[in-house]
Amino acid sequence: MEPIVQARDFSLWYGDFQALIDVNLSVPPQRVTAIIGPSGCGKSTFLRSVNRLNDAIPGVTTSGSLSVGKTKIYEPSTEIVGLRREVGIVFQRPNPFPLSVYDNVAFGLQTGADVPDRDETSQRVVDALEEVGLMEDLGGDLEKKGTSLSLEQQQRLCIARCLPTQPEVLLMDEPCSALDPEDTERVERLIRKLKKTVTVVIVTHNLQQAGRISDICSLFHLGRVVETSKTREIFHNPQEKLTRDFITGRYG
Amino acid sequence: MNPSVKRSPPRGKGPRVTLRATYRKPWSERLLEGGVHLAAWLCILFVVLILFFLARESGGLVFKDVFQVVGRYWRPISEPPQFGVLPLLAGSLLVTLTATAIAVPLGVGAAIYIGEFAPPQVREILKVSVEFLAAIPSVVIGFLGMIVLAPLVKSLFNLPTGLTALSASLMLAWMAMPTIVSLTEDALRSVPDTLRHGAYALGATRWQTIRRVLLPAAKPGILAATMLGVGRVIGETMAVLMISGNAARIPHSVLEPIRTLTATIAAEMGETVQGSDHYQALFSLGLVLFGITLVVNTIADRLVHRGETS
Ligand SMILES: Nc1ncnc2c1ncn2[C@@H]1O[C@H](COP(=O)(O)OP(=O)(O)OP(=O)(O)O)[C@@H](O)[C@H]1O
Ligand SMILES: [Mg+2]
Image (spheres, rainbow over the protein chains, first blue to last red):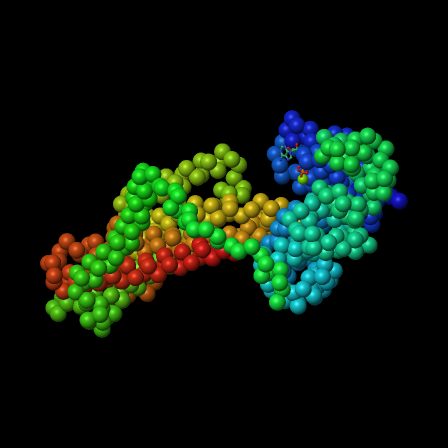
């Protein structure tokens, strides 16, 4: 299978500090790929790189290549708005805009050059909310403020917000870490459902979660990729000692 | 019922001790606590005292002689004198609204530039300048208005005099700007970065992010900034006294001279006899001002707090 996200010797520096070192990673389409690893190993940095969100941080430099589909996204010719419509991201803490639920979800459609007409927009907004189960939860009241929902609903709203532009890739940075177990389960179910249409890359601190929802698992350590494999392999037949230690909880 | 509930060990055995009794505050702490209490109550006391003296000195004119107080003419030294508050109220209102209409877009725009676009050094210079602007005494601004702005307005619109509501509004807008700029900038800065990142991540440009996310998020703060700016404009005295033209007539356009409540009190208080009708009328104007300020401040306060709870 052609990988949809592919890093080749990708490195990233914050000023003098190298946060990613020759990262090689292939993310197959329509699978859930989990990135695990101890705190500060560069998981979030890698995820943000795929959406080029690190650009805003002064002093960030990169080398090597990172591609989404056929586009090498760190080429100067890359059109960032277009890239970000292809690659959605969901953060650790839900960050709905202080707008109505509708406007939150419609936001992504209205940023590019080709803004769809009203009917098309509302159709896509409703589809997205339907997909994450919020349509049902809210009983169709889309004028509610996004910030007034429960934390778990907010997070699903943030997921829905990425969907109307029909992205290829959905990045998630510890999307459940602010949620309780029951809400976490709900979001996990949603992620499993979403992978039919979109490729998911999820960073998680929670090994059980990685085991439950991911098909591929990649362990990062001090800015390097230690091992990437089928999740089952990682958990039951790790090739590297470091992986074994991490899985068994000896460090991390 | 459920027996296990009954069998749970009895609570509160033995004498109860309130925690406060076991902890004696040192005297220094008591003294400080008393001091801050006193300070807080003094604030309230001052407000009440101001209200009391205003009401007393006005001799209840506002209530007693309502018809005249809301009359259309302010002619304190004609015979019989007329103390209609309307022309002054209209003057204050016109100047305030015009100044606000000028100051808010400029102030919010400046805050957006300072907070979101300016490179760090420029930002520092701008912030210091804004603070400096706020510190310029209003007489000085009035002076500038008289010798620079008024002649300009006069020749620009071909008027008999440049001392008009427009000149006063421009000067007042200038004075309200610093408040609006710095409070709006605070409000923008307090919008969490996660919202900015969220918007960028969805492909929004910087400008789209500001217009569609940051401004709505900072709206309560911006409204409060506006109201405080308005408060400053209503209360301003010296500058308007110098450049508004001082004509106590109900204005028909911003190009006419006007007179405000504050300017009237400042200009006429020296000529009145204590306890006279004129004296009481001026204090009544004070009461009217007090009321307006109270309303504006209350609205501002509400807006700020609504921002906090959401
Ligand atoms: N903006 C920044 N400037 C400088 N250094 C940074 C910046 N962001 C992250 N780092 C550093 O880069 C390294 C990787 O950070 P990153 O946030 O990617 O780790 P992480 O694996 O996501 O950790 P966590 O599990 O705690 O979220 C850390 O050492 C961190 O201190
Ligand atoms: Mg992280």
